[in-house]
Length: 587
Image (cartoon, rainbow, N blue to C red):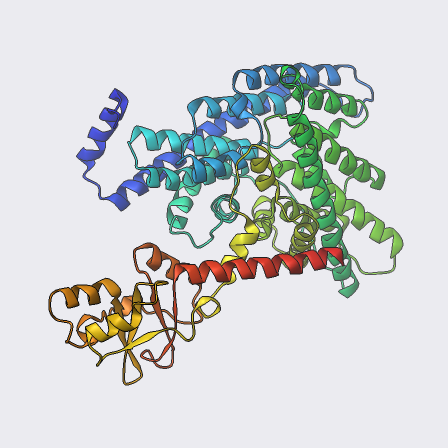
């Protein structure tokens, strides 16, 4: 075991003086993580905005063919590429890297990768790369949490718990949306909305947002008018928006993964400079449409307020799709949050404008309303986080008038995207890096599995009155398990292990009844309708076999379940689910 470093010793002494129990200590760490992550992300935001303003602040974006646009974008891309050459682990959005750190590296995120993410993404996005700052901010927050965990000599388990707390803080600080940050981390990074970390994650996110608002103010990200929903025909158009948005989302994810796979196969000696191609492409596109540069929230706001012509909306949607896919696939440091919202606003606004042209007599929502719902639909489809997308739209606009079409479009977009591309973006990115993350498909199957699906309904049982010697002789040929249920007059009495029976015989007590060794612990009782999560936890704790009883009569044994039973049921369910998905896909 390595000796603590001097800094760790000082921190540990301070914590001992506070005399905090484990839960209070973690709460203190969560608040500290939220505050420090918030400060780091505010500095990151200010650096990015300063670079963008310095380069493009005095340019007239209405003027066409300004030669400085490709020059600035390419120059900034070169500097960012140099940072990535020195710190190659800083590539990508940061979401996949954070998931890998939690699941495969015991919560370890190096200071070097955090600093590299800070610099490379701030310089690259600030100089015009068509990517978003939210993913890097999430990674920066997670890196701060990992550092705090190491300074306090936290256990591996606590490190794995603290990193997602920091991730939520970083995302909340950059997005000014604590609910969205918490939901996204629980839904995408952890994969469990009901995690015990919910309270700590909320505390850290709120703390980070308070830091951000103290420095940058608390205005919403976008300013929108009061939208109203039209009639039934309007809702049908939102349904179409959800379906088409899901298809665009799947295409966007596939384009990034396809492009990145080709980039990773390129020779190592030129891979260092491949990221610059994304900046060059953005700079050339900016000669005609400079609106695609950087984050682009100013233009999203214009789309939400119906201040763009149809042809501009269409071109910006197409060019943002291409520029973001190229920037990301070529290995730059940045996320897809902001591009998801940008694409959704332009795509939704264009569809709304077309609907108004085709159905001039119908009572339809404003074009800006379609842009707003499009933002949620594309975010849900690309990031595979439908619940997060709904709350996110509310937080960044503070408008709640479109909840019905937003929910409909989001769920449809998510469903279509999953059907067209089963592997989500972050799983695909990790797979390309040689890391296998838990599959959403397998998690979905496991959550649906119940004890009734896995249990043995006709198990070998023992009668309470038979002797230990008789029972041992009767079960001696059954080597599949080493525990059995004991019944008394047809009612469940408890569980007995084979080793307990063998010990009784060895001690000369083989003539005594089995009931003497039956364990009636009510904490081991399972019910048929329960998910297998609790069953697996008890089995992992050392129980070889568990009784499943009726909810109507807690002493009526309906079956028993073991780890092998659950694994067999899971394999069958996963195979059946995969066959269903293949049939639907072929259809």
